[in-house]
View 1 (cartoon, rainbow, N blue to C red):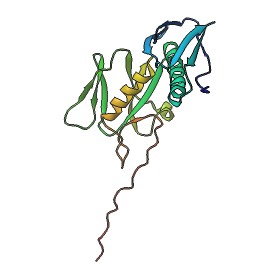
View 2 (cartoon, rainbow, N blue to C red):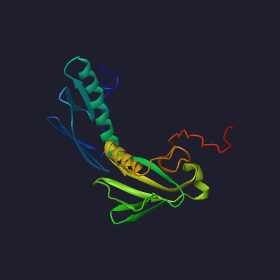
View 3 (tube, rainbow, N blue to C red):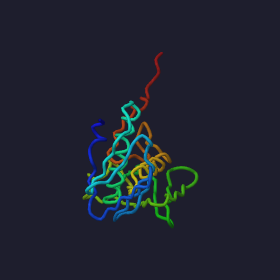
View 4 (cartoon, rainbow, N blue to C red):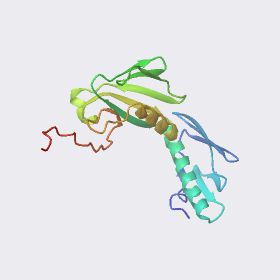
Length: 195
């Protein structure tokens, strides 16, 4: 048995789980999610607990067993608490502002970037205050919080926003995840060439 796959998932109060063949629908206070599970697993609900059982013992079936259980656990957590990714925008003259349903990013290009998140994702803009400086990466101008109940979608949107201006290898300017470790390259040293 997969160590992760065999653990039952407790269904909290206020969360409704519906199973229709391979489709699992979970609804809770933060929203509603629907996903299709792999064909190699069977999902049952007993006594407010979700149990995931696999159909065989092949390596792929064992892998799908743990994957299906992890996806279901993330769906439950998403509709109860939600997920959040924090992106720090660092760089002189870089700006982010709200416009309609999306945000406008000025990241040193000749044109601003207008980004509208997909349904189910909320973008929130924070400006760091001096007394809360430890909550941000050094030099942060603006923080973008990407929030939603679908963990996969939150990660995809955060990665998309980060791709607009990845951190520079020398000064670290750009968009990075909060707490993301960066290995900066040393700059070229100017000196008289050898004679």
